[in-house]
Length: 458
Image 1 (cartoon, one colour):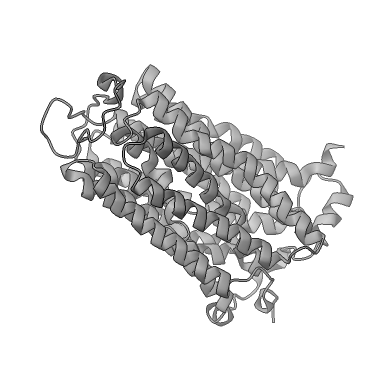
Image 2 (cartoon, helix red, strand yellow):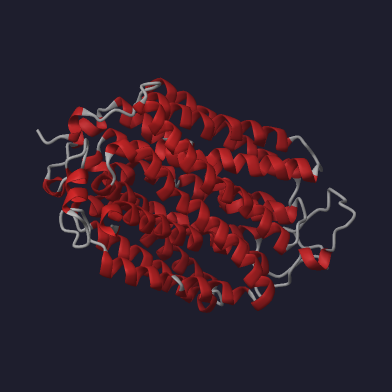
């Protein structure tokens, strides 16, 4: 009986892999609150400016005094240098995912993340070494999105694509929820070092299960019924074993208008997601003045909503396409609209809302919920255009697509050197609003979700 759902179990394993990678990506954004020295008793730059008086604020619970005297720019680089490695490794990892055993690439990705996370408490004593560890963590993490796109092409049937993409990518939201929430609790109970020791050890369980029970593709999978194997390998758009040996149609790819639309959308449509992913805990702490436990709970709540809503939305897209209410392209453009325009409106209101703590918090949560639709929007589009080259396409588009994750934390750190103020944060909000809006305009005009002619070997 269980052999008839092997493709679903495989998708769940990919979901958990995404949980691990994203969890290890964002834990430092919460842990860093407890890693740096508090400046509440000095006039040093880079601290809060107390623009808002929330009345019930207990400063001792909000400002944790950590061991490291880092400037806000250095703190920003600790977070963002990860994405420099991520950006550097994106294209080669995408190529390797397409050309080599994808399962092994994913295993190396998860194992490397776990090992390097365990090194953070030791490396943090020398800032340069911490930068190197964070860069290498990003470098090995770069494989996970290309790998997911390749494995979906191998394991997921066309009629279930949006649903299972949404479930698999729900792991990014669940990983973020678990990481932010547990990081806050572990930091409060055991100290910041324990965050990295605990988070770095648990992924080893997944590695053992994935190594022993799953193969790279359904054609060589041991634990599967022949009926399910044939269902997968004969489905429309299935990525066959021969695809790894097909010549890459570089000219056709780089002269494809839908592909260039995807590059632009992946570059600028990621701004809001990465901004909130990396900077929300900082904003909640420095501007809205939440303590670490409240900060963690509120920061992770929208990702939990994403994990529930995205699979339902993916199922809706598949249902509407099967009923001929819309084509694949129409459904994908709706998803891009939701991920770009509503979050921009939320950020615009927050930028001018002032000291309304409740209103700002609700709008920030809504922003992340809407942004999370990228995982059934443009981040699914690579597999729409060319399942046989999905890893390479992801490697190409997500290289510039990661720039925002590297630039925005560093920009926030530089802007806040003389203190966190709403006016300075407003500049960053506007950058995100302009980027997201332009991404939607380009995709709705030039984007497509139909399989391109160059997907097939000439």
